[in-house]
Length: 139
Image (cartoon, rainbow, N blue to C red; front, side):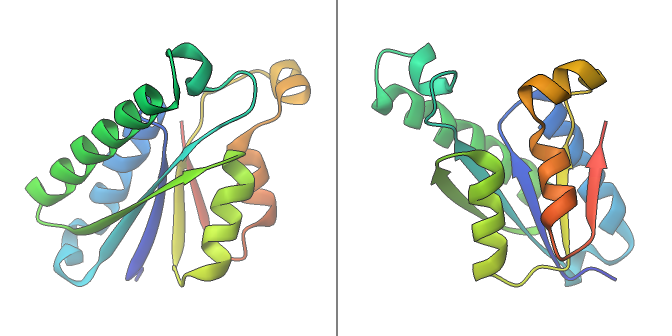
């Protein structure tokens, strides 16, 4: 049984599916489980920061998405917390895992094809390859 779960989120529909699956997975013993959310703003050239006028606007959107996910977990009766990080997502999540103790990592997958994954990379693939704990990739 997993007692401490980390759910990586970016507010996308793929990440929301991961969050829902994490809650479904712990239903029989949810009172004994704590879920932390980690939201990482990718500060590289194709990130949320450049979709908005400035860092403050991107930060506000990220924090709003985190708050909505926390509300969802609380409504489900799940103990929850959150972390807001800045940097390359896979690297930052791995650093977070190194500094905290979790039993499982849950991450959504965008469902890219092999060529897209080869060219663009995949956060979920990198996490599954390097994490020292079980990783649940939700499609």
